[in-house]
Length: 182
Image 1 (tube, rainbow, N blue to C red):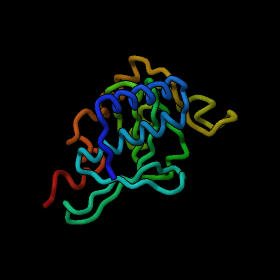
Image 2: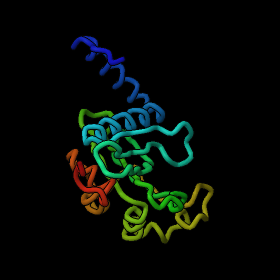
Image 3: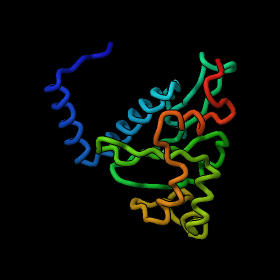
């Protein structure tokens, strides 16, 4: 059931959301990012399913009724109140996995970046992260590398992967399908 909130109620909900975001609760940030991403995908006429368990896939984007053959794409989503980027080597085993970064979750307009694992790994190579002990698994955490502040060089490498309009989602997630088939 969809609820219709008055402008005053919506403003109260927005203030509550912002207060929760200021607490830097990572679960709230992830939930907000996942909901924003799902909304963006649905605007692009892409359906979304949420796995019951977290085993590396946060969402499954799929096309069903408007294409000749059902197709789906698993998504690993990373959300932040600022700008982050990371590549974890454990995702290498999911060849169809799309890594989607949702930036600025606490602001009115989030930014979205979508990369395959190979594309993300290429960014890591250019940034020379693949030469680090962290990437090689020689530290206490899982093998990979990430940053909590994005510099201009990394921002430039990610620019081609930014999704700024609904029609870009279908091209990125389902390049073999293209536009609506039916």
